[in-house]
Length: 123
Image 1 (cartoon, helix red, strand yellow):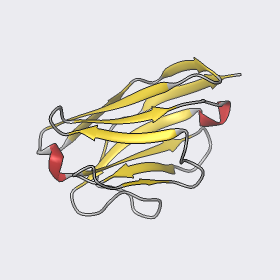
Image 2 (image 1 turned 120 degrees about the vertical axis):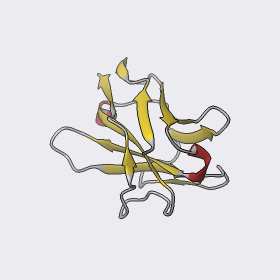
Image 3 (image 1 turned 90 degrees about the horizontal axis):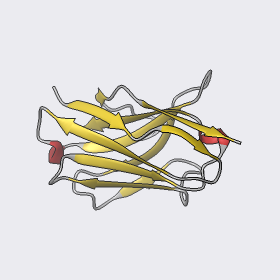
Image 4 (image 1 turned 30 degrees about the horizontal axis):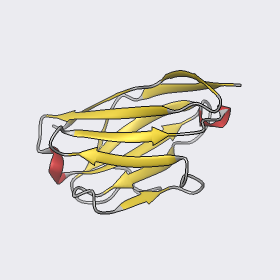
């Protein structure tokens, strides 16, 4: 199976930035579309962003464009999520995901998931 491991989360003050990383192993990463989701405490899982396996196309969830930027480097088997101008509302667990057939989106959950990385934004 494809293995995904997120990193880069932590505690940051409002207005700061974080770059989350997703390391893939086990299968050919370049064949998978990648998506980022997040889940705040007591909230439903929310679609953040997705990128096609070639990196040619990117998509963002509602209200996610601008401060969020998804990218990937297939030579390193890595995907990234840059978050700028963080607010307390961005607090939650951020998950990296992948699917070989369908681009991740709000109404389609990918097949493969990482364990998540915690992002906490203080006022």
